[in-house]
Length: 359
Image (cartoon, rainbow, N blue to C red; front, top):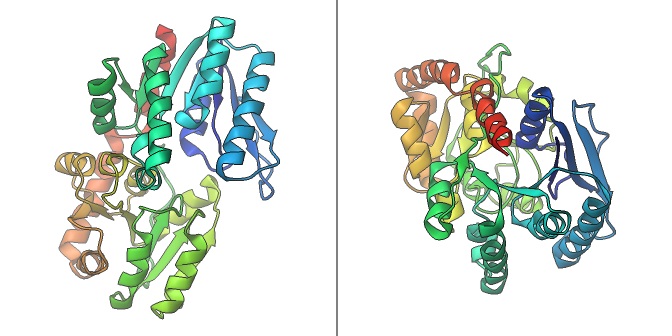
């Protein structure tokens, strides 16, 4: 059986799809992952599945989405697939149309609660458009899964179809844990609105540590300006895009990680993101926001110090608490090692294989 997935990124840094595609390929399926090629895209590593990048004239905005969806539609139409996998709503329509034209199965992998993303809910017309796509698309899929119980409940309550849960948990990071001599705080992931990064830059005024930002996105340049504004540019290092392999080497060498989301939109409030898992899989405690999914996990394994509000003073207080309270820090670090024995991709991938086996 051939499974074809499609995303709108350039494939280089998509750890979730890399894990899913590799697991299904190892289980005997023929897998292809389709993305787009960008001007700064690096050559792709060899994987046990096929990787395809579509060339586009436009790089962002409405013109990009229209062009990419048209190119994706015609590409899918001319290739053989038994199952089409739409990753989030921005690839939903071409996958649905081709699945209907060719009589093939279609699967929805919701990495986000897309119509409730912060950058969507702040623009009513854009939100209305994506909500219409969601209502048209979701009831027609043959199988669906998402990243958290919160998203699962939201989707099931609205559409009365079953959603599985495939969490963003990675493989155990067995690189040696090396605590830095001077404290280092790590943020890894997309540098976009709603990740608490603007507030963290401001908070660095009251924190005696280095902030390492690994990733790029919509607010990357703005954060440089904020670092200068608050005169913390000597405390903040912007690494830009970092490959997953290099990131696995960096994470065990920092003091703590950040998993912060502002409260605009239901997507943020019910997320359970990659970096939350990546930190404890590397044995690193973290500062996280007290939203339901993180609170529930922390009740099972206390691997994070939770704050109530993503505000500069609260972030500074939380980070300074972790840096100064040795007993708290060591307790969280110990729980990180315990948690990764049961929460890891080696266990999680069994569920993704079962979903496709049922198809």
